[in-house]
Length: 333
Image (cartoon, rainbow, N blue to C red; front, side, top):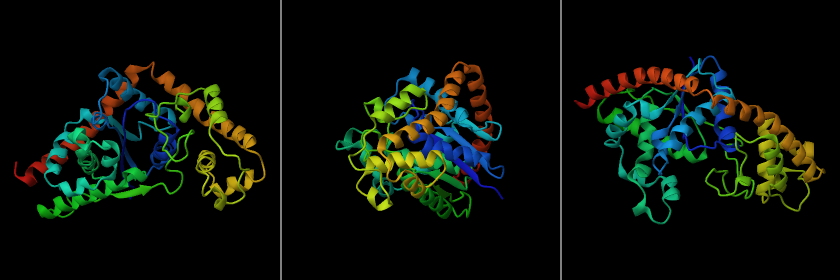
């Protein structure tokens, strides 16, 4: 029996290499396995936990979908929709927030990081975000969820909420308790300017990331300017221990060619960094430029993108609204 897989990506614009290697490339592989049933959600409700420009958000929803399609996700073999169109997500999130405990949410490290020093000014949505994430997953009886390092704790919370609800209302297995799909290597792609920070669209310098919409010249220029160190290429994994930038670039290369870090180290041992950067640029251009060109083409076909979201909304809504009806019966509405 195949896996029921749910995953979401925030439509915050400018998806980059970190999103592709850390999530979307994995989605494509999962989607290509005919035994899997995949649901990919553009999580626009999550996006508004921080202030968004409404016009930009609409465009970003389409751009996220275009990035999915351009990367190879087949809409005929999966359900792709945007979260806000299916009201069951918001409704289930409220009901599950009455099952979740403040102590559980208070332990979420991502809230502490995002809220910063002044937690009093953070929105309630940012604090309760993991409950909505639990609703997203549990509404579809998902068996597996691809997660990066930063979301593992949220999936643990989702599992706790499912088990608590099932126990409180004595409905064994009503909510399936999902398992994580964890990408063991290269799940965190770091900034090209600082190997200790995750690649992010919020970093001011565009040179810190490879955007999925970059052209060949931009990619080559960014890799040329990417931070390295003064040491030669390593001859063992041990040598990368205190060399975050070198490790990041070699990890990107290994991931793109579906190889291992060990093999990349052997291939480039004794060579100079400029030679490695040339090879990395070449691989990036081969992989990212076709995606970039396809995204730009798809963004001119708004009706086509909207039709995919509409079809996805209808399929997702049918599943999720049925689950919410059952939740109503269980809690006594």
